Structures are given as C-alpha cells and as structure tokens.
Figure 1 (cartoon, rainbow, N blue to C red):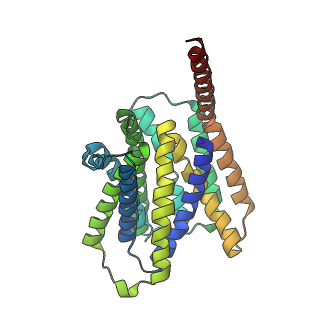
Figure 2 (cartoon, one colour):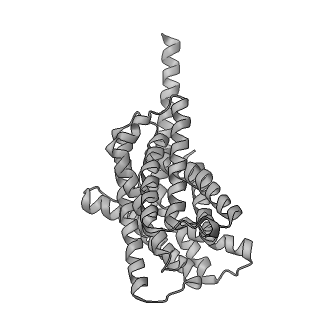
Figure 3 (spheres, rainbow, N blue to C red):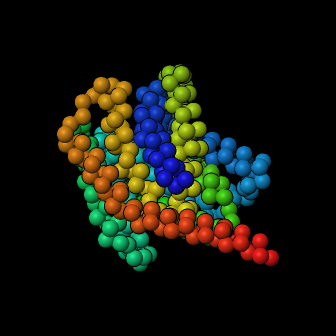
Length: 315
C-alpha cells in the first residue's frame, strides 16, 4: 500500500506544476490560487471526516496544526509562487529538490538523529540527477531579482523540510488522530495564510481571468493535488519517515519532462536520460532501508495475526 500510494502521489505532484501554470496563465493571482486550493481542500476533507466520526474540528485550534501549516503549506508555497515570477521552472525544480537534503541535515545536525550513509549518498545522487534532467531546458537570466528569487525558493524549502520533520513529530504526538485529518487542518491554516497574503499584496481583477482554464486549474489542484496528493504525503509520512515521501521532489522533474514529450512533442536529450537513471538509482539506494523495514513490519503483523488466531482457538 505504501509503494502504491507513493507512486500515485508522485504522479499527482508531477502534474500539479502544469496545473499551476495553467491557472496563472489564465490570470489567477498566485497567492489567491494557492490559498483557495489549500483552504478549500482542507475544509472539505475535515467536514467529510467529521461527518463520518473520524476527526474533530477542534484540530484547527491546536498549535501543532498551525505550525505544520505555517511550514508545509504557507511558507513553502508562498516562497515558490513568488519566486517563479523571476526564476525559471527549471531552476525552481533544481532548488526545490534540495528538500530531501535539507531534511537529512535537519535530522542529523539539529535533532542529532543518526542518518545512514546510504541516505546521504542516495540524496546526492538524486539531486545530481535532477540537475541533469533540467539542464537542457534551464534558462538563467542573472539579475538581482533572479538571485533573490533563488534565495526565496531555498527559504521555502527550509520551511518545507522543517515542516515535514515537525509534522512527523505531530503524527507521533497525536498518534490516535487520523493523519489525513491532521493534514487537512494544516492545509486550512496554510491556505488561509496564503489568502491573507494575497489580500495584502495582489489585485483581484476578475474580468482578466479566463474562466474555464482558471476553474479547471483550481478544481484539479484542490481535488487531485491537495485532497489527493497532500493527503497521501501525510499518510505515507505517518507510516515511514519525513525523508521517504519527500523524495517526490526528485520524481517530479522527470514526470514534467515526460509530459513535455507526450503533450508537446518535445525532444529528450541523452543527458536528461542519464539524469533519470541517477534519480531512480538514488531513490532505490536511499529508500532500501525503508522498504526493508516495511517488509519486516508486514511479516511481524502477519505473524501476530496468525498467533492471535491460534490463541483464540486454544482458548
């Protein structure tokens, strides 16, 4: 289930960049688009879970969900949306791929957790692969705003990495709470923060919007991107660790390149293919320990079920 969820999540996140671009090209202000997307998704999921008795609305009042929303959603997407006005998507993808590396640094340097050499090597290989994948289409127009944009993307990734590590702590602290409900609550806080930021910094010119693509973009990002993809991210993280689901940042560039080949007839270079191989190799190498742990856990769970059945028969 974890493997299937990870594959679906990567496919979703690999297509959301295109959906964001469609919305912005349709005239949607970036912060407004992000705010509507996350706030609406979080509210809908929370209401559904509340109606089925699997969540409490009081989650919105907990500081844990507020802090998670500030890092995972508000800080990450406010930085990325703003920076992409001045930084190309290729540069943005490469800088965003620092997320897994930053998680390793936070865990090892700040939390003093032991990080395996395998994880570090895998992260570095995946990051190098992202660079190779994006090099052919990378555009660099160095200016003061370009440098500032790069710095802001990295700050956003610090928010993302810190938020991911902290969210793992939240899932352990609130172990009895549905992780999808926790994710919904943090999305509400992050989305409302983006809406406030939009209100303060953006002009809403409804007449300039192309209604059909704008609505399609918002619908896809809300339902598929946030309700689907981000819920899967939180669900996977609750069952593994912050690093494993965050490696989708390595998968999204090859997916974006593949979409360009399929939808726009773009050519893929040999250097990009080498990058894809590096990414896949790095992911397999760094996540081998996680897969081994999940297999052992699955066998233990199956053994407990069998033992419990035998005890029941004996009793």
